[in-house]
Amino acid sequence: MNYYTLSPLENEPFKMVDSQFEVLINQIESILQKDDNIAKVDIEILKKAWDVAKFWHKNALRISGDLYLIHPLAVCQKLCYDGLLETNALVASLLHDTVEDKTGYTFKKMEEDFNKTVCAYVRAVTKIEATEDPLDLSTKKYTSQLTDERLLAASEKHKAALYIKFADRLHNLRTCQKMPAERIEKNTTHTKAVLVPLARRMGCNSIADELIDACMMAQQPRHHANISEQLASFVQNSRKTLNKTFGAFKTCCKDKAVLEGADGKIETPPPVFVAKQIKKLSSFVNLNRPDLFSFYGYRPYAVLYFKILNPTDESLFTQFIKICQPLIDDGIISVDGEGKADRIKTTEVVYMDVVDFYSNRIRVWVSSEDFRNTLTKQPDIKLSLMALLPPERKIQVFTRDGRAMEIEKGSTVLDFAFMLNQEIGASFLGAEVNGVRVEIDHVLMQDDHVTIIRGESYTARLDWFPILETKTARNRLVEVFKQSLEIKKASKDTQEKEQK
Image 1 (cartoon, rainbow, N blue to C red):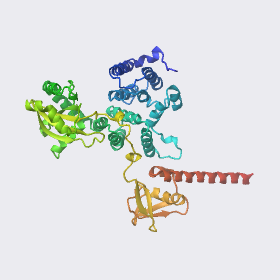
Image 2: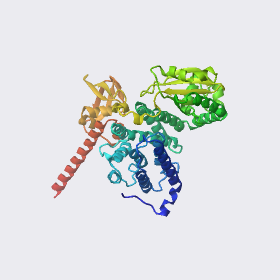
Image 3: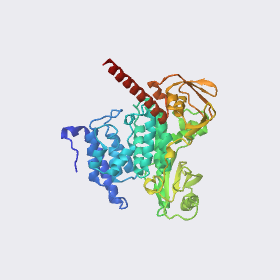
Image 4: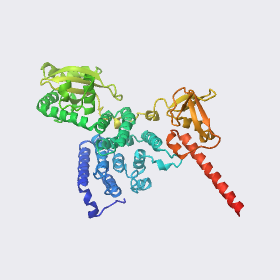
């Protein structure tokens, strides 16, 4: 195999990040030794991918000023932490930006170095550049949609590619403090509208929650930091008593349930969900109050994951109560509420809100199977391209003579002119909608009646491209300019012949 190597001098800037990668390798090897059910990860191939990433990214820096390699390493770490220990997925996570960032690395070379599956994963998460199609001259919005559709189409066969995208966006949102505000807004909007719903559909609810919380961190950093600080204070003040309660849970539930979160690490709700709960308590909320929790009466809660080992046909609520009855009888806990996690579609999950002897609130998520990350446990989940698109992609409008036409939602009157006919679009002068004169970029709505006003000759201009929202209209405008150039060339050739 062709390994990319750097000289000792060239490798000097990577010493710290190399040590972090070694820690990750040691963690993977430790997991593989403990769990025989996990497919073997090819450590040598993973190390080769790391060398390739270093070779091509070199000393590139992120907007934050950090070494760029920190980002692909963080994505790879996230996959490992969430249990996606599969060689091709881990390799692709390390290489996911090598082609997109125009380092000089190509998919052809990637396939030679690794395999077609790695290429498929990386291609799925690589952004389609506007310059790839010369016909699409206003393509940023359009190519963004194409990138999403390609990602989802690829994920039908390679679901790990989609998870790489989730982890990629998660790290970008958590480290976007120095990004321009418009880019932050674009990323958070796309995350909420596209990636979070897809994560929910796949049953990856843990990372979906993290993505939503990361959006708040990116958009409202001060509020997010304030809530995080108050949650940390709650954990610090309650640690001793919570650990006693968790210890009682472990003793009572031995051989009956597996507990996650009862090992001394106290989880709390993500700040974004705390903010939502506090807003329910009051019509006006100042999330930056230093005494936010006490002022609005919010009581933080710790989180415990409760997996029943030998489930029965009884409801999960009933099974939980039966297992924990000794704790209830001894007054160690009391049940304060219960509910179903209806946003989790892949398995039955309920939660029990309990209050312990020390007045700590604990939300216990109860299931009979591992529901925190079902990516590798749900091979039959089918995704649809429609998950990326608005539910109503088409609207109906009417021409001047009353004929009904279906056009793409978001189309402007200029789009409509080109949809009617290339000649009509090329000679566009103006438009009336429902009898009222409108601007050239007016967006049409359902059941609008549209009249296009034409000039006697072509009026098409280059600055029309940003106005057009549909590919058909843009392509027809390109044809107009092509024909115009051909006519000018033919005219010039004729003049030259006449002069001769």
